Image (cartoon, rainbow, N blue to C red; front, side, top):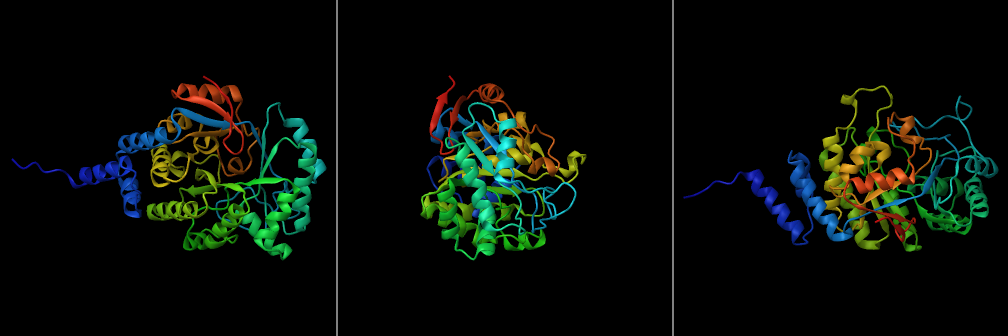
Length: 367
């Protein structure tokens, strides 16, 4: 007797077999997973893939987010953080002012400063160099993870230096890693529609390539949930995957769920939990050459982050202290979280919390 197997079920089984046999997923595979409503199967498969790479360990870091300036020449459609020079609420801090802020908010155990900000064309490149120098001098034991690839491109434009020269200047000032922001969706068509006038796709990738070649390990992101197609998202992952094949310089991939400009926006203006979990799981399955996928609680919330740890995520980010960019864009989540709460959150998912440094060296395991 012939038994008909639904095409969708057959297609899913082919993908399951690929993942279990260590075969790389294609663009068509990724789009199929996005179009499927079988979140449990996708999540379970991503969980298997993650367990093979990381076992039951989930990583976090004691870190602190810093923002030297919110003045920015760019006018990205999704950003509510930026200000014009002289506009109410705009600011540009000196190194001394930032140190004063840090002294008021830092807590024992902070291992990393996560530093991003606006593309402020009213100050020279040396300002950004001196900002890092001041922090590195005051806190020599705290790792400086600073600036996005888009900021590096901006520094190159205002200084006349090459990417390599810009990065070398910043490394001399104390830079140890680049942040992942500025990627948005790696599609020039998307960037044109969303008024992303900063680094284009090739420039974003080339900054990271240059950083990797200089020995810097970096982070990378994807901002999803606006006008992009499912195919755009998968193509984004494939471009990042190809660069990782070339350099092996990325530490982690961070899917960022788009936040509405208005904090009072209803649920229909936000990504669904279903979409957030599916994106994390698909990221784990597509990015076979990445060790870690991060669940960013600032954008998806602490409880969904906990669920994500069973669907492919191996990193719960960090303490942050006071996040500003996503909250300026309408995030309803906490601005930071304590080490104790992170440990509780990870253990609640049946995982083993591991405190790490910027480079995923293990500091302490909380059995």
